[in-house]
Structures are given as C-alpha cells and as structure tokens.
Length: 213
Image 1 (cartoon, rainbow, N blue to C red):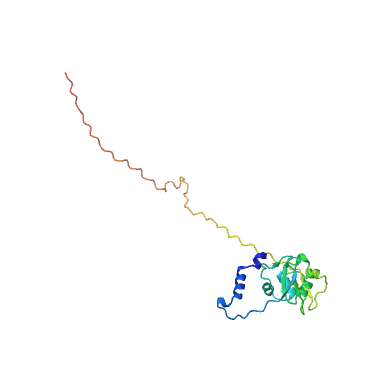
Image 2: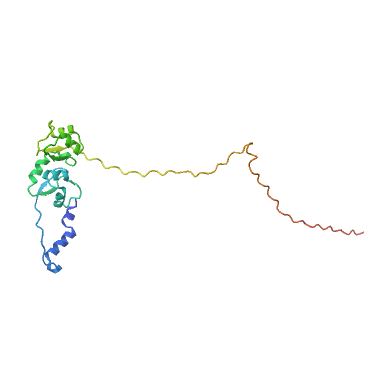
C-alpha cells in the first residue's frame, strides 16, 4: 500500500486537477467527463486476498483494482478501508464470515452451480474432497446450487530458479611417452653427439736464445 501522503498527493493527480479547473487557459474547450465512481467501503479485520473479495461480490478482480488503485499487491492488509462496487458491501461481509480470518489470504469461496460435486471442485482447486467437506462442515457430496462452498486452497510455492549446470573441465590430451625398456631401447632414435667447436691452430715459434760465452 502506498503511504498516505503519496496516495493522496500524487503530482500527476494534482496537475490534472489544476488543468481541469483551467481548461481554456490550456486550449481545452469541451470535455466529456466520466461519471464519478460509486462505491461502498468496508474495513477489513484481517489480511484478505482480492480474489476472495472478488468472488464474494461476484465481480472481476480488475474492477476491485480500479476502485482501489493504492493497493499494489493482491493482499489487502488488516484494517484497510476497501472500496467495493455499490450495493455489494453486505454480501461481501456475509461471504467473508464463512472463511476463518487467518485463512483469508489463501482460501477461496465458490458459488455452487448445478452439477457441482465436492470431488469435481476438489480437482478444480487442487485439494481433497475430505478437506472440502471438513472446511464446510458437511458430509453432502453435492452442494445445493447457489450456496457458497469454502475452498481450503493453498497456492503452490513458486519454483526455485534452476542453477546453471557446472561446467565440466576436460583435460587436454597429451601424448604419453612410453617408459624405456630393453625391448624398445633399440627402436628409439639416438641423438647425435654435439659437434666440438672449431679450434684455431696456434703457431708456435721456437726462439733460440743466444748463450753468451
């Protein structure tokens, strides 16, 4: 839910209000205004799912969102003054009383139609016929058309994102050198001995020393 000051004083709304009061100054001659929304207000005693409320008033969830633009999530918090279509407040309060307060975030209600059975409703909402019977305090397998059936619905948790598969490290293939044995020693090429560096021949001169006699 938006903070109170944001919900009541959004700059865009203020700008539209100013323009609507000064149409000619902004080059607007004629405007066909939509009729004001008509609604009733009730205070919710506990956190309540909009889908449960929509079923209670038998209107689409989108209509409730249009009447309650400050709601950013699908759950209206406890103590919230929620707007409902005109003429539906009493029906909503009566239907909500069928659902325990601590279950109004997840449980649903269903208006029984001709041919509905607890088994069929259990398959539709992903629960068990015994759970439906317990939630409604009845052993009747076929609810009367037009009556409310409480659905002990529990949403499935969102699947956790898959982790990327670990990359396999492939060792590069290197040629292996076979160990030297007596059998393969003769097959190995013998490296030539390094050549001796060239040496220059030094000339030796023999000097005869004169012996003084």
